[in-house]
Image: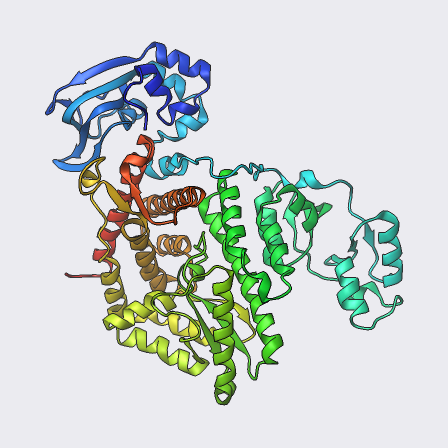
Length: 603
């Protein structure tokens, strides 16, 4: 927050988004800065009347934004207004001085000149979704500043090398040695690839000799990425596919191959580096420290400008790899499982929305043919829960962990059907955790559980009760969110994110039960006509904004030696963020109002 002793020009320069405006543009604006004084009760503009001709930056006092007598928002120190009038040429809101106001004013011509700066202009888009997309202020949460938008094609150092499928492993090995490469593309329709890892795993380990045809050990189809794809998208392909070599395409042509090592060197604190560390974990004793590495990675990616939702996706992929590694440790000690099983991630991890490591939410499902060997799976679940705790995942206070929640596929199917058929309070509590499940490891086919979810749309009573529970989250009205007083602190999770997550779950179960993430569920509701495109866009960007703000503040707490939490003091935020936070919450309340009608919820 700019200090009270600053002069008008210094105050403006310290107020986002003016702090990042190029100096020549800022100097022009500062030379035209005016000071305005307005008493409480003054009406600065009326809907349908003469629009405002200045951009106002509040120095002291407050204004109310109203429409048809309804207060939409209260703006205080450091917040701005007037830009909608300047951009549209219309007065769409009443602006009334709530407390004696001191404001700095920029004439329309100077505001128009500032819009030449794309970063500045993004903060003042007319549409809420566009404003939210541009307005999250990233503080310096890490020293790592990789260019995550770097086209991955820039890492290519030479054209790809090809070999025929009829060649032998010996031929391929000699060519790779001579050219000092770790992979060869293999001609064919479709083409394939053979790598040094294939020689180790599919030739030597399988007892094959150098006369083995390349066709017997190659991998196809190829997992590729466009040469212009940003670095973080290349990370995602490498991690999702579990490969170490990534062919890059230009149109229909493969123009080169990058290795995981090359990508890793470009991003030493990126997810590929953390994944390699997980793959190299030798024993349970190596697990401590994982949470710290994930936190450092999240800080690095956020400081590099990556969207918080994308960061959460990488965290989920890494956590999946960790679970798979821990399960291998357990199986090595306990022996071969007596039946196929599936390890399920629940809650935020099931939705791939976890950023920093939080409480464990998981479950274990095993085949009906393993019912008689239940003790094996009880020990397996206990071991994995303990190892996850060792790695930095705290125990779930509510006990939603596999050591308690395990059973045969038939038992789990009966549980799912019971939640949908009998939506009592406890069933709704459990459903809110378990209906976001995602299989992260194991060979058991859990499609019967998905089939149960597919029937949720035919159970309107269940959806109505689930929606009622979601509407129980109280989102504060923006006029109550002030710098001082009772509503000066907000719980970002309970009062902002949870209402969106819970209502998106209701819409998702109704229209696309296979969707898991909140953003996927909102998009599905729009595609099905259950939400308008405008509502979906605003709520999706509000969700992204809230996730990003929460992550930034939690990382800031960690860097200062404080435990990360969900509470944010309004006074700790720059004015532009306070405005966008209030607008985000207004979008969330709008979703609640629409959902109450859509699901026919009565209170």
